Length: 195
Ligand SMILES: [Zn+2]
Image (cartoon, rainbow, N blue to C red; front, top):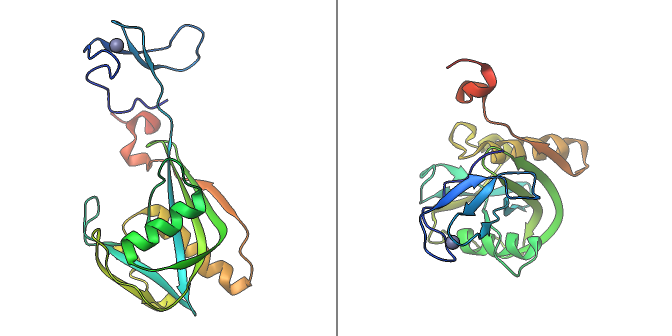
């Protein structure tokens, strides 16, 4: 169980007396306001995006914002309230790459338990080869497989998605790929035993 960045003040009553403990009748620790009794439930966030193609080429965006500014990624971002995962993936692709897509099948689901996120990536086709950088991108372009800047990809989730895609494309089949990415051992002394 990973504690999120701790709430400084209760959002119900404004008290700073928010403690990290297991509420009565619950099984996991939560932020509990000792002043008003409010229990602040926080659950994982869903990141939705598209592996969008035009012919054999894949659409990548170079990030204009931190984290990983200047590195390449697939268009993806946090799902908004009130939308479906497919609509969120299309919205993110429009926002970051100014590209309209026909959202296809859900292809990659990656759990990131250390940061309480779940990535959900769809295979998609560009409606037209029309795209450009949205406010969060420096540059958007199509890449052939042998042009992918593997050393300059922003996130491990995106590397995994792209590697799966090119392998599966050789086989001509795209089964749903469900996996998890744990923190690297060297960054997790609690797992390796090293201080
Ligand atoms: Zn409170």
